[in-house]
Length: 473
Image (tube, rainbow, N blue to C red):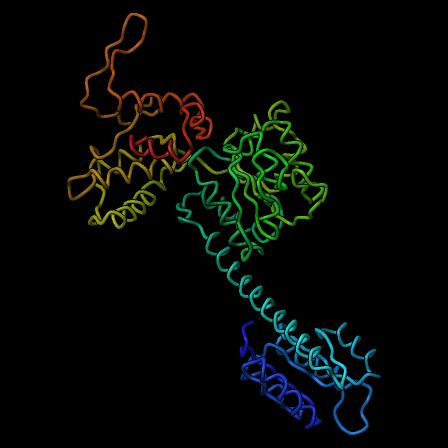
């Protein structure tokens, strides 16, 4: 606090106290107001905010019980819970002043006071008020940021029976604190459902923390989730809180939980059961209060295999289980989804809005979309960028041929088929085609598990998504 800043209010029925206090404090603070009648306090607080309030314990001749001080202390804190109140008392009333501190007063000053002690007490009290105000503002900012961060980046689209069932499950499960397990193929919108569960929950004003377990290495698992102390390992140059502690009070979304190795599943289970974390390099247990939403693309039957997933952890996670349908299981939703993203990307790239021709809509509706909504979205974005006609036509979309999809459209390509040697190797050295082929092979090998495919290709998830978008996959 720099000199001549801050606002102090002195409330006392003794005019000598008011004059002496004002003369002393106005040398240190920008504004010092006095009040000889406590009945004026509500009006003063309604019109202004004070960094500290000096409040006498007794008003009126012969009063010494401090009862009036307790009454006005309570009223001040009801009006402004962040108020910093310093009680003024006679030497014999120290015990009463201590009781006032138990009821919310910050400190007390005995009269006649020593000027140095008076100034020091007020200085500490004003700093406390500043800290409270900053903390309150930070809480409000964090609530606003948490709410903004938890808002779905895109809506949950579709009015088919499977999607109505999903939305009904969200509506029923969200207001509870029950853990939720979301099952579905890659690209079906598991994180969107998780965010919607958080948005409709009682924790909506708190943080939504997303952790991609498929991207967390085994060696950093405990540090990432539980935190670490400085010096706990070679690169631990400072204390760091883990994701679980950062999500305290809010929702923790564990994506790709099915990829977590069994020995790490055991560590996660212990934390979820005991509701506390111990940072790496520390013996101190830190309590946590989080709601856990998990998601995986692992098939339910495989998830219930003891060799793949701990059943006690599964029991802890799937209090409520939500199954997201693949896009091929709800083709009636494809027109709505396609039109939504077409409008979105037309705005993004400054293109005039386009309608879909009958053949274009028939083609995308008939296709099986192994990458689900994410793949459809990428195909729409590519078409918006490359289409040269007033409407989208079937030629604006490229699809992989699918033997089990009679309505599928084979990929259109003007490039000659690569020649194959006797050993089965290709003589095609075109980098674009080689890259696309490698990505397709990795995706099929790992059943469109993006994290595993990216790892196999030596890429990050983000880099793989960019290349999939580039090749219209």
